Length: 449
Length: 180
Image (cartoon, each protein chain N blue to C red):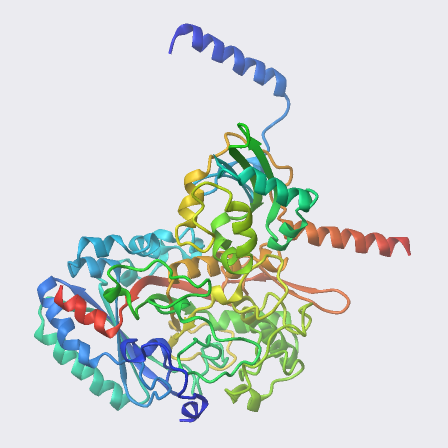
């Protein structure tokens, strides 16, 4: 695995052995996995289950090595309540976490097409208490880890399996359903031991992502009490998106005649070519070798493209990480980064097809931050569903924005910008929830209180 | 409510009606709540605070404003501030602070804490009880001091500072082209 060679095993200053692996590990290539939701029927039985499952929860020691199957566990607020944790602990959670993602839909711009009333039934259910994810490089590894977890589960009748969804790399070689390379560019975390792959960015303070460490302001974000419960934990954003690949292909074919023009428009919307090659490193055509090279495909910023003529300000990648862009509104980019570990689900659409086959496919967006609720609300409100921060009025993200057939996309050009109109929503939200992912010792604490 | 009050209210409403007759209410100027406190009009919100100053608070702030000759250009850096006003009340013991800005004030509060922490504390540190811009309780503190305005009017509720800057540039560029 080449990724192993990219990370220096030095300067590890955070407690990797106590942090869950999923937060730092990259997905294996290709990946196979399963997301499971469990319902807690009885607190004592659930605590016994936790005690027995702890040894199978993978920690982040040697996180650059992702060859074996790994298991992660997280809890919704309802789940923690069912576990009968101390009242003081329950009260100490941030408000947005207590209320949950659906209740904060207005603040998240999860409205109209994306409103909670339109979500899949499973995300409206009240029995989602524990989420378990297993990732593996191979199907056999996945199945054996799954079997182990099921064995533990079967022994504890107070915990019921209520939802199970498999996921796989959508398109061979780690491409998402739209045909773009996935999983590039996660923030580097200070003290995690990662090699410095982006010379234009500095590692971000661990406290932005993991509890118990100092954040960028030299402070700690609000965290649940007591410290032994919060330490090395983080909050998880889980969102299921339905990807409208045919609509995307159709929009491209309506807006641009030749395949080359269509590919350029798609790259302008994403900020990268399909191979993953960043547009501002190869503005005119894709460079497959660059796209596949993890040492190079993220080593850039936008300081040489301040008018956005190469990478439009509205492109998905530039919105989500403006990397030294001059913005109309003063913002600290490092405060709004998240660790993304999204995975695809569903079978791919026939390549280039503009006709929907009626099958469900898309993305489980999984992300981590010590202030995940605040960060998601900021991103959704400011950088995804607005354009004011880069002087684009209320233009929205072309890929994940709520565009509803009225979306615009501004592409700076010479001498005049080109404006695309009538853009539909290419990714519809089908559900979501916030979870708390405790450190390994914190799970033990939970099983004992 | 007494008959006298009811009659007085009716008379006031009638006078208001006569004074504004023929001027229908424009939906664009509808005012809503800006969240936990304050009013919102279109893309803009207002924030009003009246609070106690520390013993040397007014003196320090005056020195800052005098040194800057009353010019607060630096605030442009924020990019969402339409205006800002500092007024000393009750013999320099209290401060009235009013501002109008784009969106929600708390959205960028974390950014203030890492981008302009010195300036924030230099000014607002003169307020009694200011926890510091980096404090996790700063949001609650501001909220506790905020007084929601009873009425508020802005001319262009849908033009943000960024919009105005852009339109100014477009206007200037267009005029240049026409003068050629």
